Amino acid sequence: MMGEELSYRELNERSNQLGRYLRDQGVQADTLVGICLERSLEMLVGILGILKSGAAYVPIDPDYPQDRISYMVGDAGMKQVLSSSSSHKVLEQYGDLSVVLLDTDLGRMSNYSTENLSVAVRPSDLAYVIYTSGSTGNPKGVMNEHGGVVNRLLWTQSEYRLTAEDSIVQKTSFSFDVSVWELLWSVTCGAKLVFAKPEGHKDALYLKELIEGHNITTIHFVPSMLGVFLGSMELGDCPSLQRVLCSGEALQMDHVNLFKEKFRNVRLDNLYGPTEAAIDVSSWEVPLEGDLSGVSIGKPVANTRLYVLDEDNGLVPLGVTGELCIGGIQVARGYLNREELTAERFIANPFAAGDRIYKTGDLARWLPDGNIEYIGRKDNQVKIRGYRIELGEIENALSLVAGISQCCVLAKEDASGNKRLVGYVVSEEKLDKTYLQDQLKSSLPEYMVPMIWVELDQMPLTSNGKLDRKSLPEPESSDLSTKEYVAPRTEREEQLAAIWQNLLGHRKSRYS
Image (tube, rainbow, N blue to C red; front, side, top):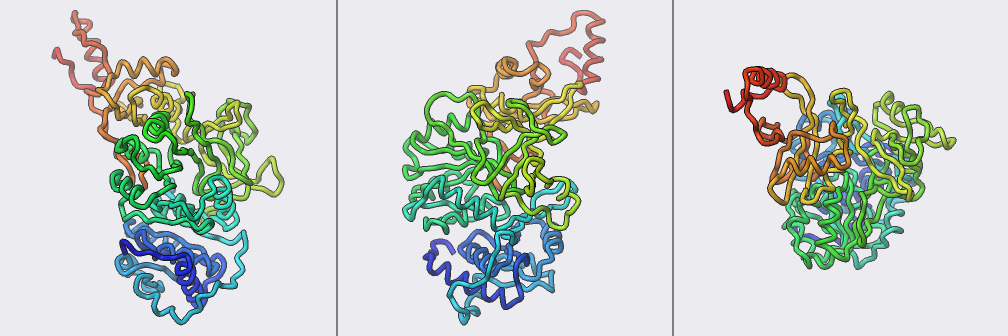
């Protein structure tokens, strides 16, 4: 309910009663309990009740396609799901599920004690299973344990030192792991937690009103949404804001420069971490003074080890690109019911006996100052005309070009099946393709410079605020970067032009 409030005493009492109810239903350590409802106070009561019972929660977005929900319910072997009167209809076809409606059924638990439960929860017990996209088409459930989550929360509080005077916005879908610290960090320090309305995380002006109306001090943004938010801000807006945390995508230099322009005294941190390692495993506080040569993902958080390895899992030298691998307490248990994939991605740590590392599939390199630079995905490499190209490296260079507020580079096939680099940009001024290419050629070899450019008013975003690469439009022939047109002057030149048009898949030229 909009405008509803709960004190921490009330939150604790309600979640204690729910936890006792779940224990009576037979849940125990590593039992997977689903939770399917929109962002609300009941959502937090539900998550805490599940954790207090000793079980692990599995978030189910009620807006997910029915096939995805069916797969998750079956794969997790769910017997209990917490929902609401407005969301439970997506669960009606599963007759063997016990569904509790948190907005109407909590009253029947009033006879349960409000005292804290005496359930012993071990660091190795599961805290949650979040499903992420899988390369096979089915999502894969990542199993994270209490020890890793608690480590991340304790590091967060030691780093940022929130108090009861602080206010945090909860705006990330609980199907993404950023929501875990948004929901639970305040519990460790007594800060106020403010829930954004459903879909409010996509509305920059609504977020501005929310920040100013509730004196928000702390908020998280995916970089793509940060760019949209900053575009709606003026110097002096959101005066209560003290810290902005970014993760989920590569933070671009233009984001940093625009942030420093709009918010002079607000801390900006860039964090990195996959779902497979309890939210975030590295952080970098962006310097507010001086010029930056690039954006870093920083250094490991507490009790975490980061390695940059070659194809044989050996350490690469300083400055050399390799695969980023994660060790330490925050590494997840593995993928639910996916033993083969778990064995492939979670391996014994060759540098620390008894430890495991998670192979992220991300490319990175150590910088001379001890920070790490994120390069891109291993599977985001493409081969064009015999050259192996990392698209993230082109995007990094493009983000440094003045006037480019957002960018993305894809490899697209033409009519003949040949791959071509396509640059998508949101520009503050009219797009000058020649200027862009000249700027890129100053830091990249010519074969890494896109010849096709698509200018957009804004980048398409997913429901989580990330760049939606699948929704980027197909380029048209008019998007091809060309110099001033010179018509063929002889019959042979006309024949050559026709041959190249056929090879490149373009329509006949303007002279025909």
